[in-house]
Image (cartoon, rainbow, N blue to C red):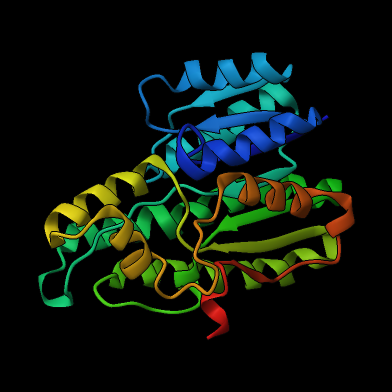
Length: 256
């Protein structure tokens, strides 16, 4: 059995990815998140699919907690084969009004935590001559939009970081890839739809078609199942020569 550690995996995209790994029955899963019922969520997935799990509420802004999570996972499962840096936050504001503390938190959670965790698992991956680092970036890791300076800086940064560790890991059987989703239908996005409809006095259908999916050629949200299945593929032996990429899963947004 291999072990996968997925940050931000008790909700949204991360939970969808963890579920797809659980379905394979080939991985122990290290769950991470700040949800108060995170242990319950992890345990339920483990029981449902018959896999061993662990839960950590390590805070992405606290490197000592991240290192402790890795150490505890290695004690429990012996190794970490796959690291998925998924945890992330967002804030929307014009640059002149963008709060300093929001910038620091977004860069810290979306980008710097991936550095700390990759560094923590790297030695073991090199020694075993196998490793997979999968970073959940965004379509905004490849293009920009207004009012999202910190988020876009962090996602462009994670794409660059991915390329660098792909080069460093290649001689040791370690691959690194970034998945760049467009809009994903999660509870968080569903709330954004309702909030934007109210703020702009538009129907929710118009918010989806005229705001959120406007730049996508395929007018559909990306599903967490799609992202999870792609991550499972990238973690597999079949993908051993696929490295250093930023894979858009965005309905054709980046084709424009």
